[in-house]
Structures are given as structure tokens and as C-alpha cells.
Image (cartoon, rainbow, N blue to C red):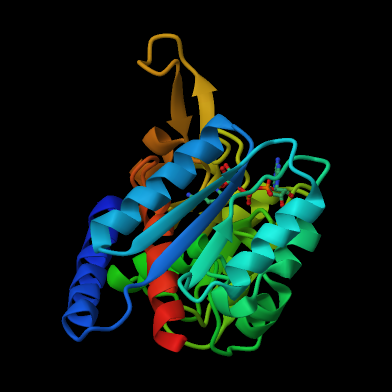
Length: 290
Ligand code: NAD
């Protein structure tokens, strides 16, 4: 069994980006600049945005954190997005989700200029992904593909079972794994909360990509011997004995499933760090395409 070390691979990617940025600076080119918009004070969201901004400094990017109050109106937020769209300094930006309930998330995501949409959430970019066109691949599925590529995991003709159909993970990774190419060329089954007898599918899978957000959902008796296991889940589970009062738990019962798997991602240290590295990669692409 090999552990897919997302922390190491993400550091390799960051090192590669650092070199490209140093070269750009040496040639007098503009430095890539990522902006992150966050509305409100949600603890997990603040943590994610903080690590994205820190990652920018690590590779030599400029970054701007746009912190807005929970009470901001939809109109004000849309005006802010419009100004980021028009700001020539900003190459790409993200709007951290979830947004407060009084704001229409779809309206906000539609307002982002597709050329600066480094999260790849705009329908134009999602459509291009489905059509094999040049786009921004959402960072988490992009990170999974990169992990599979760098560990040279054979996906061609394999049966990949995805658990979860969200717009940011399950749906796009199911499309990417079925596209032509390497990684890709998989036969994909997309399962979700309405799937009957889900374990019947996962037991047949050569590759399981789990993105549902239910701690320890995938047990050893649900996977076949030698399967590749990608655990996207990140759930804070209360644990009084932990320094922070919680532990980060994946969707996979790691102790049991790792015994049967050929490759497996840990949580933390698997898909999570890859997500940040691929956001940086998308920001670099936005600068290079500008
Ligand atoms: P979501 O809540 O939007 O979607 C969850 C999906 O799981 C839904 O499609 C639902 O149908 C399915 N589902 C729920 N319960 C199920 C069940 N019992 N059986 C089968 N399917 C079920 O979640 P999301 O945004 O895709 O995130 C999923 C998990 O991945 C969360 O834990 C989230 O924190 C994590 N995540 C991690 C990263 C990362 O960087 N590692 C990035 C994004 C999301």
C-alpha cells in the first residue's frame, strides 16, 4: 500500500511555480496576483482563505484579502466583484463559499469574469471542462488528477466510482475521469445520496473517489482488494482531547480501508494541500493567458 502524499506533491508543485514566478520577475513581467473575497466570520472559511493567501506568499505571488461584513448586501458584493473584474492588477480571484443565506450564490458566481475565475465555478468554464476545452479546472478535482498523474496511477479502462455529485468536486471529477487522456479514460459511476445499495458499486471499483463529507463512511467491507482510494472529505469532528477541540476526519475509515488498498490518500495531508497548490497553478495560468 502506498500513501498518496498530497503534502509532498503540493510542495513540489509550489516549488515549480516559485521557479516560474522568479523567472517572470527576472524578465520584468507582472507578478501573478490572486484576490480572495470572504464574507462573514465563518471559522473554517477564514482558515481556508488564510492558507490560500499564505500559499501566495510562499510562491512569490501578490495576494489581496477582501474581507466583507456578514451584513453586506448582494448589490454591494456584486459591485465589489465588478471592480475586481475590471482591476488590471488582479489576475484571478475567488469568492469563498458558503455565502450568507441572503446572498444568491449563483448570481455571484455568474458575475465573476470567466477569465479571472480561477476556481473554475463559472458555467462558461464548467462547460469548457465538459467539452475538453482550455479552462480553469476547479482546484480540488484538478488536484486529484494531478495526484493520480504524478503517482502514475493507471486509470485507463478502470472502473472509477465517485461518491457525491456536488458542483465543486463529485460532478467535475466524474467528467474529468471519463475524458480521454491520462489520467482519464475511466469508466465512471457517479453515486450520491439517492443511490441504492451504494456498496455494490464501490465493491466493484478499481478507483473510489469519496466526496460526501460523512466521517468514516467508506469501510473496508465496501472496497475490493487493491483498490485506489481518494478521500476528499474534510469534516471537523469534536474531540475534547485534541488541542483545537476537534479533529479533521475524512470520509474513509483509513485504518481498515488502507489494509486493502493499493494507493490511498490520508486526511489530512492528501487532497487538501493539493487543492491549494492547484489554485496557485490556476492563478499562474490566468496571468499567462492574460
Ligand atoms: P456537498 O455537501 O456539496 O455534496 C455532498 C454530496 O454527497 C452530495 O452530492 C450528496 O448527494 C452526497 N451524499 C451525501 N450523503 C450521502 C450518502 N449517505 N451516500 C451517498 N452520497 C451522499 O459536499 P462537497 O462540497 O462536495 O464536499 C464533500 C466533502 O469534501 C466535504 O467533507 C468537504 O469538506 C470536502 N471538501 C474537501 C476539499 C479539499 O480540498 N480536500 C474541497 C472541497 C470539499
